Length: 332
Ligand code: TYM
Image (tube, rainbow, N blue to C red; front, side, top):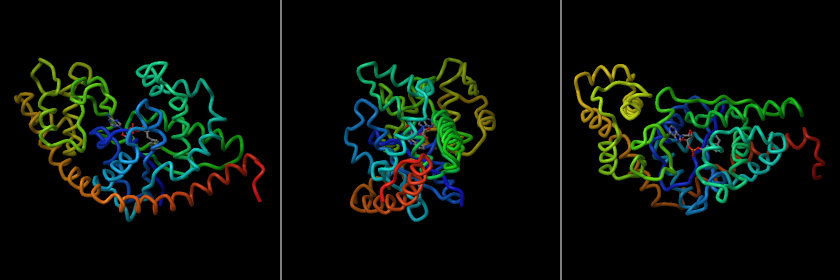
């Protein structure tokens, strides 16, 4: 089977709707056809200013949400990045073949460093995409299921893999991003030209998987729209309504055009009710199951230990090959 690898940062207690539709839905769908590795990039979270907060609990909560969302622990390998030291080791090597300017062109780095400001931007934020490349290349992944915002990082991963292969000899498989047709970019409900994110200033524009259903319904009902009054898809002129249509389309597997037709002559309120119902119906069981799983942290830790052992087998092989190809003096 071809292999996929992906992960979501444990930088909050809950994943949000963007993570769910942009990534988790595909994790679940793809585990049938692929040998799937899903991990918790805890070392990546250290790059945000408060990234170390509750990291152990948040790592467990994140893996619980993978499982509650439908990732099958029998088929897929689940592990925590810091349990497999080869990630950091390969990242170092890849840093030495990454151009300074190349890293500086990453739009997520530019956005986040602007937001955090000089004093809160650490060097790890700058090299973060290189650690991500290491995550992917270590496992010889064929595909990387991610939302739209990670596409540039997967592109850098391909560039670095190709560069290493070219310089030192064929070592890495070159992966492709796997981006969902619907839900690849979900926007903030209050500020629908910005993507939904863990770090938005106000939580009102976000829907978290672990939110109370009443809170979810309320946030959708108070989503910003426009004063046009016609349900239509137009990202530029009607970003709020378009975002709601994308969410409904992703949840109901109905093309946006068909949805627009079905709302002909109806008001935004109708659209919001349908969106709220669809989101709550899908997320409520995920929330309930997550809470059940979190009641037994020892079992989650056990699963993660099994996953880390399995992941290390592949990771060690790749790292050994890398050191050999470069020609480092190897220990006896
Ligand atoms: P992270 O933790 O920011 O996001 C996790 C996944 O959710 C997707 N996503 C979204 N999709 C649609 N709409 C949104 N508003 C939205 N917000 C987030 C992201 O595209 C992502 O797929 N660097 C990664 C984590 C990572 C990784 C990796 C992923 C580290 N190493 C190796 C894949 C492979 C990140 O910060 O994602």
